[in-house]
Amino acid sequence: MVKLDPLFFRYMSKSDFRVLTAIEMGMRNHELVPLELIVQLSKMTSSLVSRCMKDLHKNSLVWHTITPYNGYRLTYLGYDYLALRALSQRDIITAIGQKIGVGKEADIYTATNQKGEEVVLKFHRLGRTSFRQVKSKRDYTDKMTTNWLYLSKISAQKEYCFMKALYTKGMSVPVPIDYNRHCVVMSKINGTLLSRVNHLEEPMKVLETGIQLAIDLAEVGLVHCDLNEFNLILKDDETLVMIDFPQMISTTNPEASDLFARDVGCIKNFFWKKFGFSIEEAPRLDQIEKTGTLDLELKASGFDKKLEKVLQKARKKFVEENVNEKDLEDDDQDGEKDDDDDLEEKESEQDESDDDDVEQDDDEKREKLETN
Image 1 (cartoon, rainbow, N blue to C red):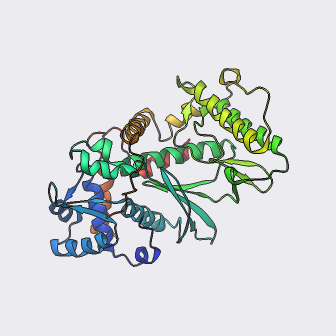
Image 2: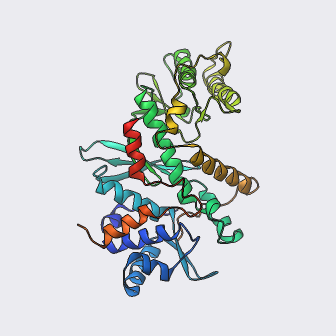
């Protein structure tokens, strides 16, 4: 798998980014963006576009095919670089560090901010094992189920919204800093993933803390849906911090009770198997008194039912396509008012053709978050 190359990112030209942005815009209506359209959107000469494309393809930022026509699409690496450039221009990050985590739907990197402090970058990567299937099985019209970059952007937006809301309520979560496209920036938690912990001074206390986190969420109207040892970080003082929020749902969801019970059960089972501790009776969702409506507040702060519907549809499709194809290899990375401002403005104004009422500009969403 191709990795982020900070040196190459540093020396990429303005023209390189214009071409990447043009491809991103074209992918809103095309599975593969024709070279002619890239030239048109970038407002560059065809010779300059071709020269840039050669370097971008060589470094796996774009994927190219001549079937069914001569077209390009962004790889996740190309999308990474667009997000990194935006965050760098906002002075959110100044340097990229090492990869510190990898999962089915995300890669985690460290970065440095302007103060020299270490922060965490989470790149959402929905459906990355599906790219080979997308190329071989799908026609090029089913955009909403194959544009995993767009769906990863929705997932990142959801995580940022939930993290910000939880942090504002005093919950034990990382500090949300910013997001762009599919990348969420948050504070780094100095601790160890609970799954890697082999010794605890007070295991029963930590177990009760984990259960209480699930209860705290339910009291404000939310269920984590994936609260387990892989999404809890143990700090040096044996307090727990929750991470990974894209799958959270409201307690009014018909499946909320079962998913809450699963969260609690995962924590109980982990502590019983690894430390020999458990609790006699686990709380049920219907026993918890709701004291807040964070689930309702979030609908007014940048993430609504329409976005949730699109994201859930994509996750369901991903599961259906991969249920019998566990051996697929990752294939996501094969492959001053001026024209730049015009390109960026055009990018933010052009909505997804199938979801004009869903897609909004990132800055508008961020303003809503700040006002809630």
